[in-house]
Length: 143
Image 1: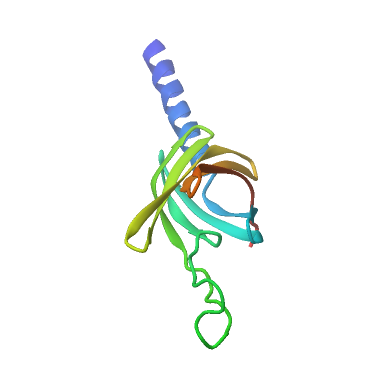
Image 2: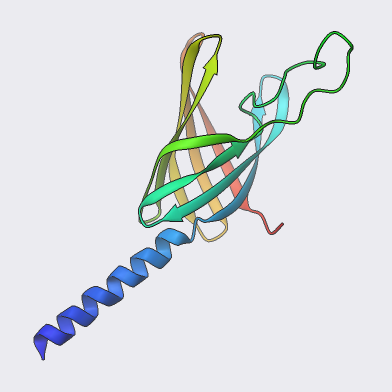
């Protein structure tokens, strides 16, 4: 009897943990302040157990800057950038984004927590004056 109860409890906890980890799956949208004003950043995230995959669009230099060339036309729409090293542990999340800038790989790391429709992240990257951090508050998108 005890073995069945223990096995049932372990199974229940495993299923509950998996469902809780999957809660981050979806689209999250944030307005992030930068030196050129506010910009929209979209996180498309997918949980698979304790592994997190997905993309970030906007705010990462995913499109051409400025006028898009010598003609002064509109800038290209930002392209999604894949996240790497994504992990979920309960309500905690970590991942990185790696981008090539002029032959140099720039790594931005994200750490934070999620609850319900709120995702709070700390973005950390190397800047001209050393390490820079930005707090990001994203909301789950319904679209």
